[in-house]
Length: 163
Image (cartoon, rainbow, N blue to C red; front, side, top):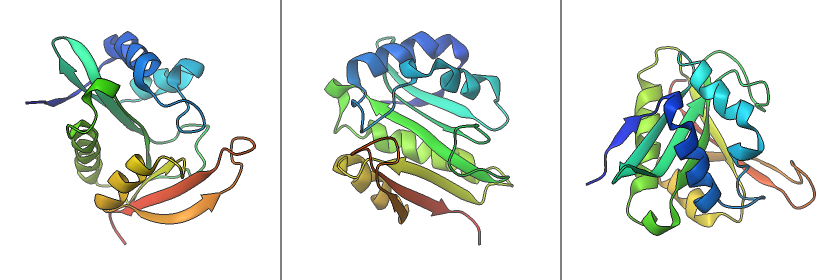
C-alpha cells in the first residue's frame, strides 16, 4: 500500500534522482534538474507551494507539487495554483501512484480558502497524463503551439474550484 506524504527540502536529492531515471524527456516534461531554482522555490514558499512524495523501501517512487506566484508561470494571480509536477518511477507506473498524487494535491488546494483555479500544462502527445487529468475533472481550455520551441506544444487544463 502506497502513502502520499508531504516532502521537505531534504527530499531534493531524491526528487532529482527520480527525475533523472524516470521523468519524460522534453517536450513532455521540463526536468527540475534543468532549473533547480524552480524546485527550490517550492520549498522556500510553503505558504503557496507544496511537494508530496511516495516512497517504497526508502526510495522515492513518485512525487508531485503545486505552486503559486512562480515568476516563470504563464498564469499568475491570487488564488491561482499550478500543478507543476507529477512524476512516477517507470517501474511503478500503472499502480495508481500518479492518481494518488494528483488527488492529494487537489485535496490540499481545495482546503485553501483563496484557491479558485488549479491549472496545469501537458504535452499533447503525453496521452496517459492527459487522460489522467481529464478523468479527475480537469477541462482543456487552451492549446499553445511551439510554446517552448518548435514542436513543443502545450495543452492547458484547469480545475475550477469556485465560480
